[in-house]
Picture 1: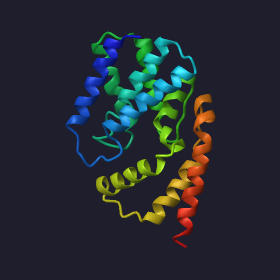
Picture 2: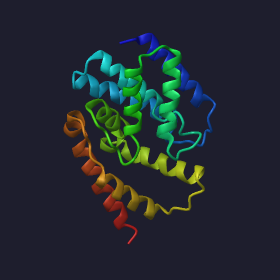
Picture 3: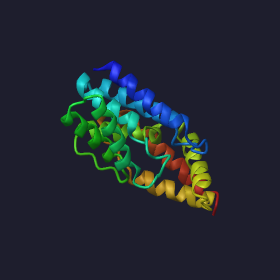
Picture 4: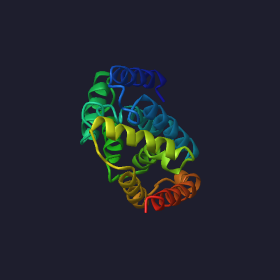
Length: 198
């Protein structure tokens, strides 16, 4: 694994978010850091080879790099940013294609085609299966209201969350083993919250 390249990736992406709008309460550098950490955790558990882990970690750093410019279809532009950066660092084309694939797979609905793409998809929505889910979900709601002038009510947001997370599927063996049970508990808590609005 090229730790020097990964440090350059980290600095490049941190600089992007350093100059970003502070009203991105969810899609910010904290989210990126968490996805990188989660990807490392899953790769380690699954005993992914260092060279392939490198692919996932690079993709994790870049996967939302264009979000602060335009949330809509940001995955393809984020993949382009990663590609340009990696070309400048003489990264092999076949590896760049793998990085692009991982980033593009995170577009909702997620569409991974291999284990590396599955890992990044699970790392991106890792919080769904964690106890801090509700804190993260509140930050996302705050971001939607601030960035898009959304008039979505709390009830509608909970309904949307239930629909989205009920349809979502974890993909890697790590996520199925360690995140799925808490995810189901979180969905049940959301349903109980929804009942209070009736």
